[in-house]
Image (cartoon, rainbow, N blue to C red):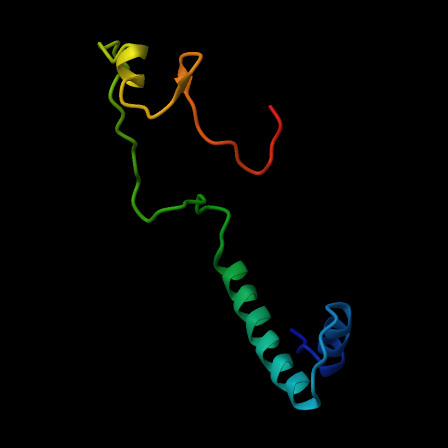
Length: 99
């Protein structure tokens, strides 16, 4: 695999509109080369016979079944609100939005 060159880093810096000193170009070239090498090693490990996964252990979600239960009536829910309008909570207008 070829190393990231100083000229490539300078080109990337120009595209990114970054002003880099000469010593920074050398420093970043070495760092970027290490990053590219690490990514290449990860790509080598990924095999077709290994299924992709997001966790090391299999996970299952535990959901309870939906059941209809008694709940508050609209009047009960709104009874503690500081302001009510048309059967809904009234809140202050924000961001100058129009109704």
